[in-house]
Image (cartoon, rainbow, N blue to C red; front, side, top):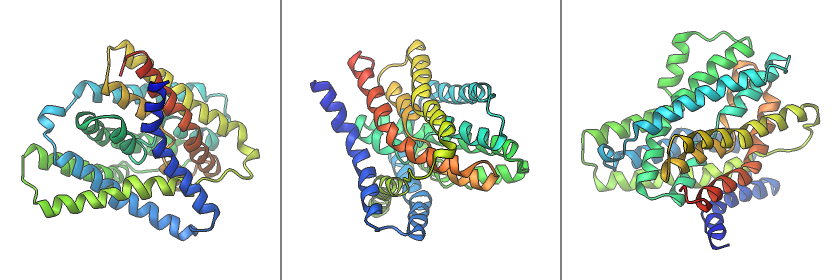
Length: 311
């Protein structure tokens, strides 16, 4: 019971802020325009600042984990290939594209970083932050290729490349890597300012996820949505964690794998679905409901790892 309560105390605060967002939205605190503006603030300012500050102020020569990064890249690509196969029964390509993206693309940054800070010491948080740079590139490139195919929206390789290198999460992480690897000193005033800006990601980011949750009038696409939830919050944690354990991962590496695989579908799933022509309704409801279901998937994953002494 003590272990369970400890796990709940580390995980539930993140999701309580999401529930606060749901409550405030029901009270009318957020207009559609306000939500869009907060999403932009979190995505373009808060999360990049958090990643830059976390990586730039640490000794990456000590915390870089190539084995973990290779595993994550291989696991994500393998899982995408599996989803393409298991979703072959979905005849509508636009619905298939939406389900596949929801299945593989987790909210590794906005939900993952606060969870990492609650669950791990500095070393684990840094390993996650560094991994995030590679995952963000992989998620964006894979999503654009798949959605361009299923949505019949032609995307030039040059446009794909620009979308990836302009991603603010990648820019923030890579700049942090540069500062850390070159061991460049950071003035205290800059470091504190970045820390305050990064707080936007761990507060407003979670709040706006809750404010964006809608669960009304989704009956038409309910089978696809529930199947996507199964892929995102049930199958992914089982397969990712099973593979990591068999490969001998323990401790923080397993916690990071759990965060990667059990967190909700990324908010960007809806944005990219709309942009590239797959079913945006499935994506919207999938993102919303996944945020709720992931309370169970994250809690169960972390608790079981700790119960069996693996993390």
